[in-house]
Amino acid sequence: MIKLAECPACQGRGVVQGVFYELDCEACNASGWIDRWLNQPLPLQELAVQLGMNLRAALKRIEQLKSTRSTGPEAYYQEGNRLGAGGTNYTGD
Image (tube, rainbow, N blue to C red; front, side):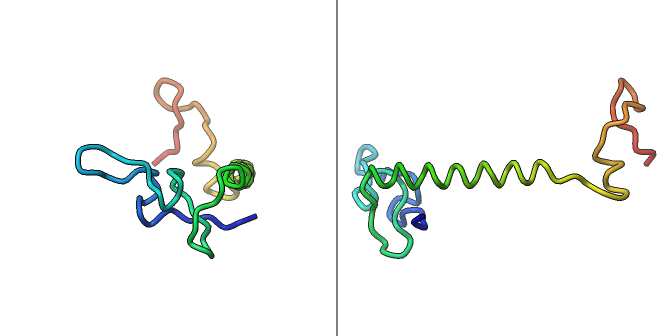
């Protein structure tokens, strides 16, 4: 997995401001991402593979964060007990 960084020329947008309109950023091949260590743009085929791997890692991390359950007093505040007005969560505060 290649570490990616936002392009410093376009700040990750993929376009730079021209005189009258926005132009594709040549520093990153209009992708907004460059190789963090070499500071060079990746070929588009390699970039697609790297972005896919980064996406899968991010989705896995999101699932890990969602699956963690609260314990102790915090758990009482996180779960809905439907005792409040209109069936909302009532915490007794």
